[in-house]
Length: 286
Image (cartoon, rainbow, N blue to C red; front, side):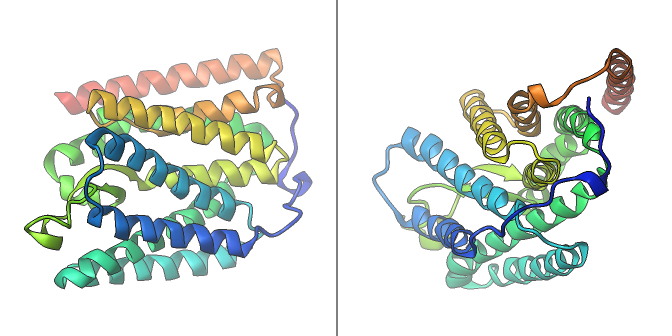
């Protein structure tokens, strides 16, 4: 694998079009407001089509924002601001039908933007291009562990409301247009904050270290959509991060030129990690 330090990385050449970023925020907000009020949508179309459309819009927002050339101070200030807006919006959404239907979606958009900024901040820990591959692999394995054996899986069983608050939920079509009105608003699927944070991290690294950003984004989103379809088909919670990490690795397979020593070290590290996660999984189950 070719090595380069953060100083040798290639910075983004242009700012992303702010109109596109604003348009994506508006589309996501409109989707979250409109879908619960639309009746007559076939159930399977609402489930699969709605989930995939919201996922693509949300991931596109993260992808566009990730190539924005920002400083750590920018990201800290914006992350804190969007987190505050998210919390305030989520609180306001609890009061009345108007808040639930119109303020809640605005809080969800703030949640996405906060995840974007947090992911870009997290990407700054990766100081060398050579660390990108191990980061992808470890992130995917760790997500499998947390969902099936670790804190995320336990939270889904014991405190699902907490997981819901830390996710972007897909509203059920027409659920707010029935006899109960907005009180009947329901959701059919969700994506967790880790998925958005790590997509921002992956895309920020792709831009910083001159990976093909367009191809990387398409591969990651396609892999995520495949994971969403599978999760909906089997109707069990599944981690999306392994799919996204796999998409990133496949899109950039030729970029990772590992020497025999690096390949051996990576395999050893992965073996140790898998063993540690397996022991932790057994301990948690016991």
